[in-house]
Image (cartoon, rainbow, N blue to C red; front, side):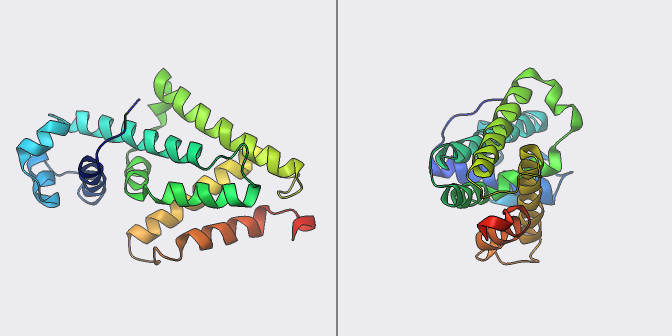
Length: 190
């Protein structure tokens, strides 16, 4: 489940394909190409089958989520700044996140590469919350794994609500930070 950096146009096409697959999960490759305004030949450059496309989008989404996790510098940046950068980084790739949420299957983690990718992702996030607990920012009675899962659930839910037009994108980063910290922040840090 690996991917590499792409040029801006390829990034745009993959993001559009990800949303097209969420919005039209039964669409043929031809219909997906038409939905995002590219030729079938251009789509074939990315993948020749629907299964290949789903695999490629899952790998690319995982790559982007992990890259934004690294860019947030959760291990060394000031805690609140790192949290803010993490949220903003994850939101930058909301199309791929929506796709990954929609196409996630419980057996995904049975693939060794996928399991390693997401185990590492959550380990970094858990360590961030442990650091924040030691600093007195996050509640100590809530485990780091619970904080990680809560933040990802909040991000996922609100990204989906934004995609469906229920909330404005511009207010999303601050809203997620505020809602998360309202429940996770240590009373002493308020």
